[in-house]
Image 1 (cartoon, rainbow, N blue to C red):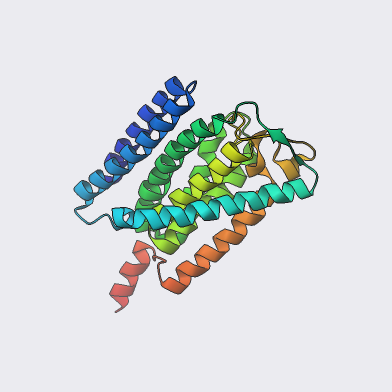
Image 2: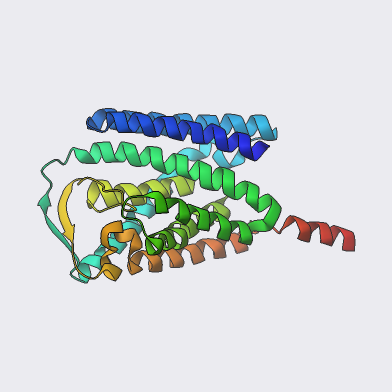
Length: 275
């Protein structure tokens, strides 16, 4: 019941915010404002509904930890996508022609990505992963939530099974493992936003096949789809898969060292009976 209430509450904010972004999309400053308001409102709704339904302090979304967590995630996400696009460019598949004709698009893209990153992290890590983990433990919840995250992206334009697989392995794995290692939503929120805004607002590439408009740079990709990601964008490239797997492995190693891995409920019950 708690899972359903939390899911509906955050999904409702996400839906309304998404519709408002569609209305505002022709005005970059209005898009920025709507995106930021959606992100803030979704976070407040999540915090309130979790505290109400679970009768506890919402430790994964403590306001005092927001600044440092989001900043670290933003820097990491920016650096990781820059590494991906750098590798694609080194293979001659990404070319910068100069500044775009409408660099102000970057402002609107930042707002859109803020709303998307926050609502998706609250839904997939804050609600879905947490509740599945309570029943099945960290590892099964990790696999299942990443798979669902990838599958949802099949509804995007230009999506295919390979693109969804890449999102599941790289995006779902990286973001979920960041949460497991820190037990905070702020780092994956910052990481998600940093990756998306760097891809769209700075390097002007497709984000998950969404037909993203150009940001600051006038740039193009061409060549082998295994290198560029094709119509889905760099997230479907082998570079992204490699980066995602490596970063996921580091976060999971950190989680193991910190003791933040949760055993399945039946395993805990069996241990108590054996004791």
